Length: 480
View 1 (cartoon, rainbow, N blue to C red):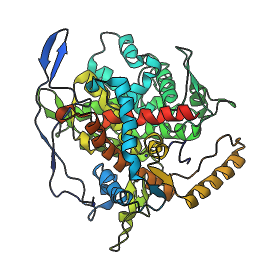
View 2 (view 1 turned 90 degrees about the horizontal axis):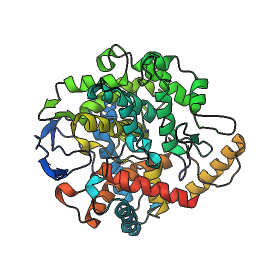
View 3 (view 1 turned 135 degrees about the vertical axis):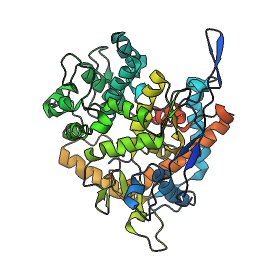
View 4 (view 1 turned 60 degrees about the vertical axis):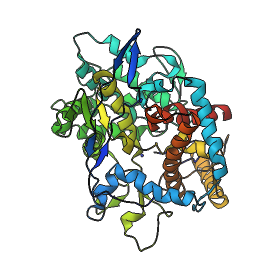
């Protein structure tokens, strides 16, 4: 896993004894009054919602480490060492923190000032609009008027879920030429456009009369060769992990057999009906779904699709969670206490699936503050690019040697040499943990620099979208 240029594959640790209350804030944090065509209308005030408490780690450590609550709590233990420059693998220069925040603020101001409330929440929707083309809106407009908003939302959930699952690092040797615009796209945005065009062509549907859906039977018939053709893979256009992507979709086909969550036709979009009818969902002026409920659907409904070779506790696979040497070693800890969970892909699904439900059905979500910044190569790479984090010499040398061996094995030219580590390497785990902590700190500093207070403050999802994620991509383009 390249530290700088390759994508990563998903205070004390306290557990509340009672549920917590969450005030509901729209994903893009709009003001209390909106104006449309000169007329003002008020966004209805919504009640506070009590969120369920996380599992007790001392009674069920596996369930706790699979919970969303554990991600920030466990990462904080590593981040506390970062603030004291006591990490195992990185030097931390806190003098670079305000410089990093200023860089993020400059990009946000350039693109959105003074209308910061127009910043959308981070999610897959924006990736589909790469190049300024409103592809999702065009897709919605292409469907008959007889299709109601609930079915439109189901279809977008179908699309977004498959697209996110395909959104692993494509590598530097792959690009996609849009069949509709003729333009070339790479990386995450290229994978988004490719998945959208495959979706519209019916590659994931078993119903030839309805191509724009994803269902278990359609995924089960999908072959590696068909996926390769859909992604325009060739001997000269190589995508990383093609077989793994096909295997993930095959596993998804089996997971969709859960009729309680995904209905008799085994569609991801049917989770909408489950969420709306769930006892925890409140029917206020608009539906209010709790993030823990959505999280449980994704972790329990999709848990079987992930590799079982990952970290396990008490025989239970935890998913995107890894031991880290920077976790406290005293007093003597049990094995689970050395683990830092990230669940990056599940969090990316949460961010992405909320958007169509909010836009089309005005659904609100309680507990969005539980979601963290995504610990992946763009957000984490920003911290390295600005000098806030510097890999220690011994680890850098080890990573470079690993890169050379990998390049020789694969026959790749060494045009650019970067440290290379596997996803479970202690360097990567530590890096991801401090990324979560620094993103929380950056949010506070960015809002301070923008002079935003109260309900005008940016949410974490907005800062990710307009700031850290975009800044890192532009830095990479400049370097290339």
